[in-house]
Amino acid sequence: MKAVFLTLACLAVAPAATAADLTVSVTDAGGKPVRDAVISFTPNGGAAIPPAQKSASYVMAQKGVQFTPFVLAVPVGATVSFPNQDRVNHHVYSFSPTQPFQLPLYGKGQTRNVTFTKPGTDALGCNIHDSMSAYIRIVATPFFATTDATGKVVLKGLPEGAGSLKVWQPLMDAPDHETGRSVTVGKSNAPQAFSVKVRQMMTMTGSY
Image 1 (cartoon, rainbow, N blue to C red):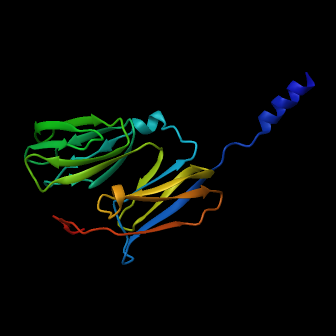
Image 2: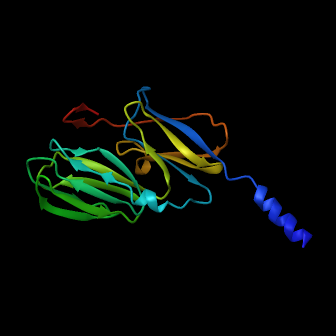
Image 3: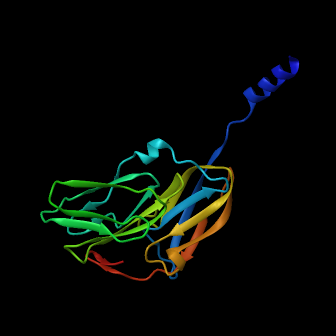
């Protein structure tokens, strides 16, 4: 009986799993920040995606005859809505092997939805407007974020321990547009910096 009591007492005072934050920056070969890079961390033992994260709101809008955002990161199992906010009709599609789909012609104020069930990348287009393009990056981890104009993100609440840190960007000149490294997350983490080569693309708002 005493042994059982001692075991239960030890379990009661066992430390809770700790979590840490990790800052990641991405720059190009010239030292300029790279936006639209999806940063993900996968613990070596894997990590389940919480139902609340799968059911969160993810939107790839059509506005100004463009997709917005240019890159949208979502977890496996998430549903993305495709609202048409333009005055013209759009026909959204993807021929990517990760998850091909077609959203036939629909107009202003209408929305279509797609649930993404596999990790990978879907490149998007519009059958009516050839200049429209965007990407949905589907990740199999709950720990991810997309860089903004500063080229930086903070991954929050990472479990301590070893794992894989990856950077994906659709214009990156690398196999599968991705690079990465092994990292060990601890209570105090030095920022992780990546320098990548990114090709230019002209958009309606200027040079990318």
